[in-house]
Image 1: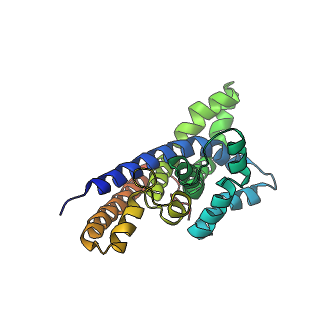
Image 2: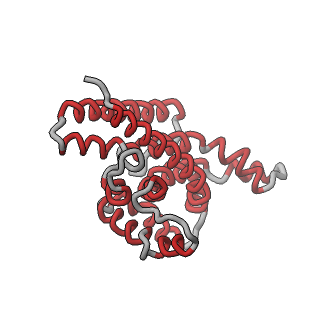
Image 3: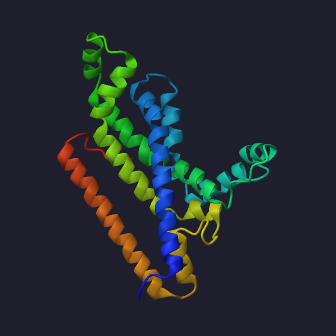
Length: 231
């Protein structure tokens, strides 16, 4: 038994989504993680809670409220409609937005942990050498936080690949547009095509094993913070 054209298309769409979401999240999560790691503001606790909410909310709940927010009658949906732009639900762009929100803690928290673990001393030493705040961040903080970024990239990519509930709520099941790998497996099961579902599921199991092996390898090599995930 081999992969069908629909399976290959779902795999390609899943990889495309995961790469795009992970890349955007690494950029967006950096200032959030930096602020959370350094601030003493009373806002730190509520912001941390907001970032971590996707970890505890059922995907269908998050997907439902995203559907309302992004839909034609929602806050963002109506704003896009007034600009003449297409609505985000049931589109690839909608999947990107929903996946970024759902995978946010898996990227923010490893980077935040890495920034916290390096402490203030390296930045203070750089400051005595007259390095500007920007130079201290680029040339000191980012290199020291590299293990956190590697962990965040792996976790963010893997979590996006494995999404189902939020994907189905926001994207539906449109071939070539929103039918990612997890939805394709669901379709095979619904159609009683257990052989195809088994093949794709084995690929997901192998992928999950490789991700975990890579994370533990990174943890052993870098000997940085022992906390590589958002847990």
